[in-house]
Image (cartoon, rainbow, N blue to C red):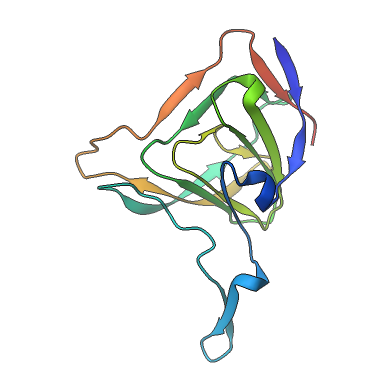
Length: 167
């Protein structure tokens, strides 16, 4: 069965079951460096789990074919994963409380909003809307021996998918 998934605006309240929205919140800021810099402090705290460390990477995303078909989800059971756009382009986020098409929710993030997906939350891989869109990603880097599998994928049964509504 195919259904169309509406796209909601990304807000901290709507996204709370899945993680945190990362945005410049004036209420969580203060001046530093002799008043020349405003620090938006601790907008999200990376959850790296036991034995992990925070790794900063750049993901360069390109758009998925339209209409975007959501036929799988993934999750990271050992740590959180944050995405912060490096250009001010809107982008999409699909998350779910469980790996099922009917559990999916889609959010339209502004170009000045990032997200941190909580540990173990099901989500679709990066959904860029521009031909090239870079993201700073903070996630868990495991031990040097790469013990511990921090990626689980769930593919929906054939024909059981979600189409994203047009943006």
